[in-house]
Image (cartoon, rainbow, N blue to C red; front, side, top):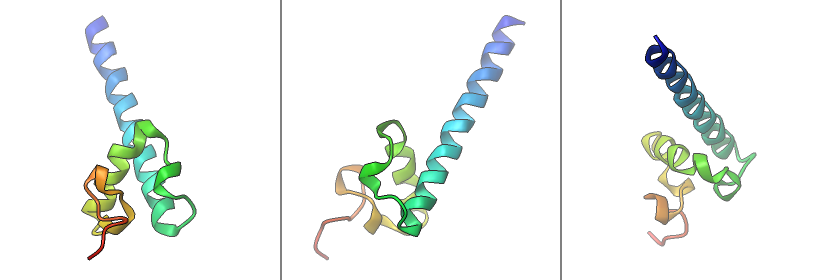
Length: 71
């Protein structure tokens, strides 16, 4: 029972992290937040969302994007 509760709470927390990464990705897309202002714990997830959305130019190269590169 305790293990089931632990797994349930972990799933909720991970879901919340994904939702926050999506929130910050949307703010970056709208220009309300720059990628460098995204909290460090959410930058990897936010970068994945932006790249999957076809916007690698908003993501720094260190996270797999093309921001700041010539091309």
